[in-house]
Image 1 (spheres, rainbow, N blue to C red):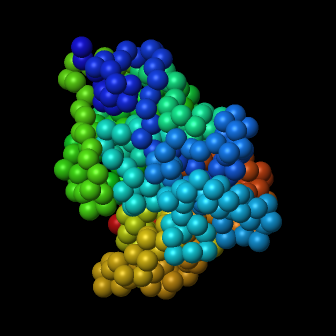
Image 2 (cartoon, helix red, strand yellow):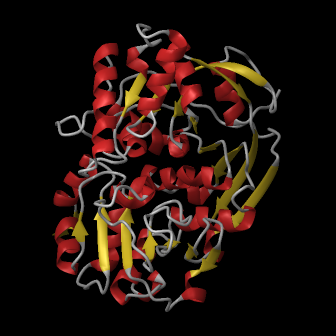
Length: 431
């Protein structure tokens, strides 16, 4: 029987040869991820259900990456970190990456990849909706609630329904003005924020496989913005090269069968696409940048699991080199590793950090920062009447701070070009 890549991975996790879309199955979990927002309530539920002295199913398979409310004086944020520390110590969790130490990594979805936890053919659940980011590695990754996560903590298993798949094929050679962010915003405009509800979004085609891993992660990261259960890209030589540098663990590469059944299919030629934004207040409120060009902005924000990777900053530097920003521009590296790379990665003879500083940007410490609003002292947080162009993944009212601010989601190229002019600007004007 023909199967999609998602069905094949879930078949393996269920110790089955075949699973049907719509069928519910017990899955054996490879990795459970949590962070400082959802970790404490998950640990509480675990103790309530399994007993206060219960031990987790496998301490090596639990990854705790605090990242959301980190560089703040907020006492509630500090309390959450204390609770993570306490649980990690009690349970002997070796994959706890503590704040304020050399082990701190930054944003969980990017750190998971950097630290070698993303392996083709495996199953990852996380207490964060953007856990689907990891699907860029030819694996199954999806977000779950705290109760489900507590069940995994105790058993290493979860009862799940196998999703149908939608296939998105991007043909052609990527032009320099187009990014993975433009591709996913294009899809969202076409299918809307509930167009892939509880379905797997599979990305395919020459353009997709020409992308580096970090750009592929942007595609799968925003599957959840269409309601997707998971986003997935089959592993290839680029994936394997990335993984082998970071892990020596075994893994299995799966491909969809040519005659696999899909819920629906979408085809694009990237040469026919152009830079787009998502206008306030929804990720599917798509417009071409040209059609909204000239809209005044007050801030530009380049960061988050979606737009704070090294590749994103290289794109931004292409535009910002030798320029000055006209509005407050926050550069927020996703991880400590990315922050270090800004200091040594060269573009046209200058480090990325130097390019950003010369342009008048401010570089923040690595964390989720204003992507999720955060406490009042969070860097980049929006205030009333702000109009922000941002490389983040959501632009609902209040998502980046004030409910009275507007957020335009955009690629790093568009965010950088707009920062220079102080208004929404097509990056082709600078390339």
